[in-house]
Image 1 (cartoon, rainbow, N blue to C red):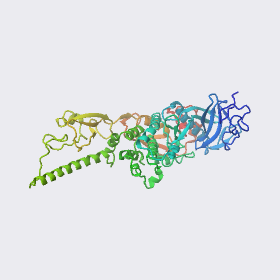
Image 2 (image 1 turned 60 degrees about the horizontal axis):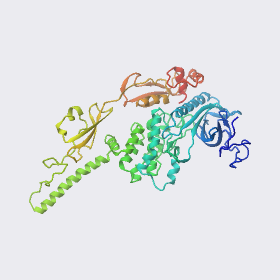
Image 3 (image 1 turned 90 degrees about the vertical axis):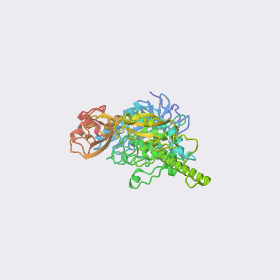
Image 4 (image 1 turned 60 degrees about the vertical axis):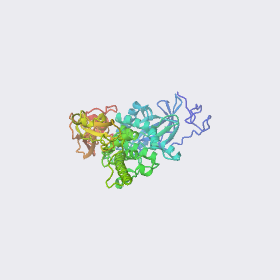
Length: 553
């Protein structure tokens, strides 16, 4: 029989959970709220001891706890959906509400699937580790590591000034790497905010606050938990589809808070009247290019928002990457363009000034047009000012590669996929066309299109929104969802059709329309879902398994 350990000091309790601890003199009375596990409850045959209740959300309850064998503090989250649960039996088992049994079971499966995936994925950079997952008491328990430190929210309140962009980027780097790993594994966090970012005393920042899709989606069957200012607009409606871009919005919002000291305006309010000020306007020390990147990450329309975390990391690190992105963006004026125009204006004013002084000196009736004796590096042999030519839109192989027109440049080429530009055509260049040429053999960097990224449409018919999302994200396929009424033949929330048929090769940049079924399910399908084993694979396309998966939405 395992020994009872004090949940405060980890010392052995010879008399059990009564009175006060003889070692630390702290109370051992159960002060956990009614319905929660009592202080001192033993789980998994005494492997864990439940300590004090911490918090609750729509998914469940969180407790401090002890891993007895290792004498180590941990956190335990217990699946306990208040909207679906009717308390506990005398033995401690959860009891679903009458008429909500199927939804309780399938929502519980969602909870277990999420934490099973996190258990396999962690430990990983920037992610809080899930140590254990099991079923007991007609529910699911997940054990998470606990670290000494503080939340990012607390850290920001202690500072006397905002973080510089470089400081913010460095602090968030491990978290962004962790989120990118989640996305690669088909998971979306949907709850990134300063409260859920931990800063351990002796380690890098880590992301916690994991939750199921239903917890982080408005109008769902669970009590929703959204974070105003950090939750993306698509999270406020069950009719809209969240994706990797949802976490990009939240990361942009967190960085905005770090460099400006202000929480972004909440998405619902912005949709009525978008009064979000740029980071640069709030904090002059934030460079324009950095501010523009945050603005792109915080766009209300997911289709116009930055799509992936690696994109965000690169753009926040390198102004050249950011400027190149906005030079091709919608109605954006980059800092590089402004500088190029300014240089041309300065050059013209310099010539006029030289002409004016020369005219006064010689008192001549005609302007002096002879250039200075020494020819500058941005002039040709005739003394005329040279500017960088425009290569964008030209075919590299046919018009640029062996052309004598560009012998005064060293052309550096990179390639990338493009849905809008034909293969072989130049997408962008650096320096921009019209910029003053500063060297006799100047480097000219160009990006050449490789054409669209062709992929084969996977079979997602009958899949839930979450599982369809995993398959499409793995292939970098862009998508959006529409909701239709259920005709009674499919389970609610399943994918009924797509506008690109299974097996078709197409451009991954094309937006695939997913038709998702809403409304009540056919009774026979509900019965199949209730009877299906909980270990069914989410990758199966069999009808019974699809029905079982569907209730997770």
